[in-house]
Length: 411
Ligand SMILES: Cc1ncc(COP(=O)(O)O)c(C=O)c1O
Image 1 (tube, protein in one colour):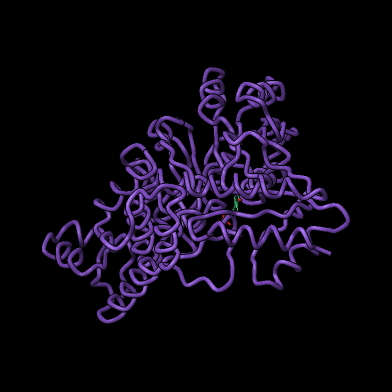
Image 2: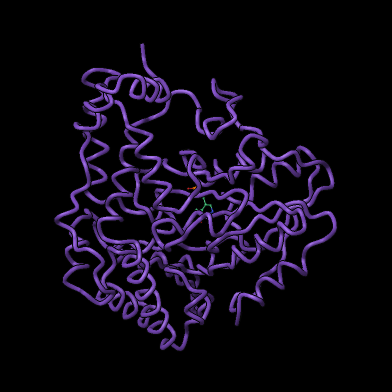
């Protein structure tokens, strides 16, 4: 008999001795060896942190997938090994872990469902609302397929209307962005589908203000938050969105196939679950989380990822990643052929910088840097043809300087 993750949790909860045993065996991310809250320019500390990764070459594409640090890989592998030894007898103290996770992202107690990724979490929100033909969902012309296709599916199948507008890419103020959203709303708008950080340019949107305004008009907010957790310090309760979808395998550096859906508590019981599982009728967050048997080792890896970031300090990680992006932005802007599409104002810039280069294409640039073992993301969507560079904690200033020098000489 194979026990599902739910069975294990039930077992761990029902048999304290079992749960204690399992807890004792689970590996913890090592806190002592990591520098705590290093300053953004403490290069010795960031070099030490970089040594926690096994990255070959230079990884400037965290926006697609982050690199797992060693403690995360170790925790995942060790759990998988222990699990396979005596099938089903390696429980996870989910109550404790959920509390750690909720604290990490500032979510309401009992509001976080662990899923596979942002795409799945966005689909849960979209399919879970009772939208009718003619109801409008408003979003921008800069949405990733992972935040867009759930609405396109509903448009085709149920006749909802998915509308997009072009947001200002270099806003002077939050008010400018909020006004652009407000101008695109119509009396039929039922949902704002907002990317917290645009995948295309890294621009940060004023989610809290938009949510407040939308709620006052009875409009539901669904946030594609694929990027912020692990990159920006956020408090989801303060943002107060109805739904927040994210991928832990990006900036949070958890194993591939880990994501979260955070549902505002008053929405949980009234939102349809996507999957009819044994818990579909539960009035709590389990209605979204139970998808049958799934891989508990990934959850252990996710916990290790949260512990890894807490051990370094979330504020320090954000400050480092964003200061690297500013360094990159400033250096790129000295190359005459480069046109940057990420915001000029640092407050709107996250840890991704996107640009085009005159006389070449995104595809060629990606190949050129790829030949130097530098991994990047080409934003080919909507013909934008940007090259996007992500600056997470395992990138060093000298790596960026080398990349910029290569770009300066790009054919
Ligand atoms: C803004 C945004 N939304 C959604 C996704 C989809 O993420 P996933 O494939 O983890 O579901 C991405 C991936 O890059 C993204 O950048």
